Length: 206
Image 1 (spheres, rainbow, N blue to C red):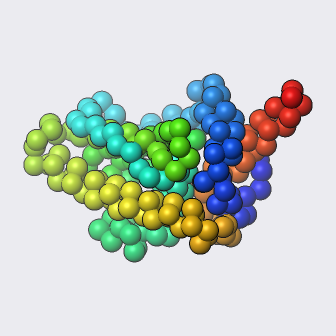
Image 2: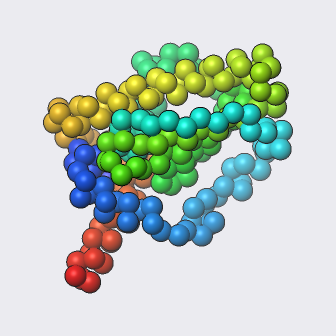
Image 3: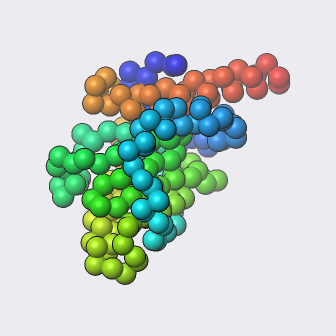
């Protein structure tokens, strides 16, 4: 896999040309179950997902590149400052599925999101599903949903500010902590590798 000891450059969040290449390289690929969910069965073997029916869904747009949201999910160095209610020991399960999906089990419920690219590199369609053992409208579910949405809104606001800084040229690229940000390095490395292969393929075929 490509080395990503530094973050992808800001242009990978703002350039239409890079964005279009990325969509062809990453999102127009068909992966096998083993490629898309490596090791998933072992990770979720202890969870009875039938106890968590879907209770509520959300769909809205964010003014940021899809990678801005995935960056935040892959590390929690920002958590003490951005999510004070969330930053505490927890027995939760937090799973990431390359390139843009998550599954989170915490606080008595379960949620997932997909950060879906739009036609604009600075806009993402966010799709959320919320699951709970108690019915929609119950106090237990509403408490969980309120907590989960607080975290979601905080992330949404951070991502929009991040995108503004990227487009303004305030930030170009940075060094990744090999221990605390290994998730960011992993997924950005895969994106870089797939885009490089796609670019080479298209250059040869041109």
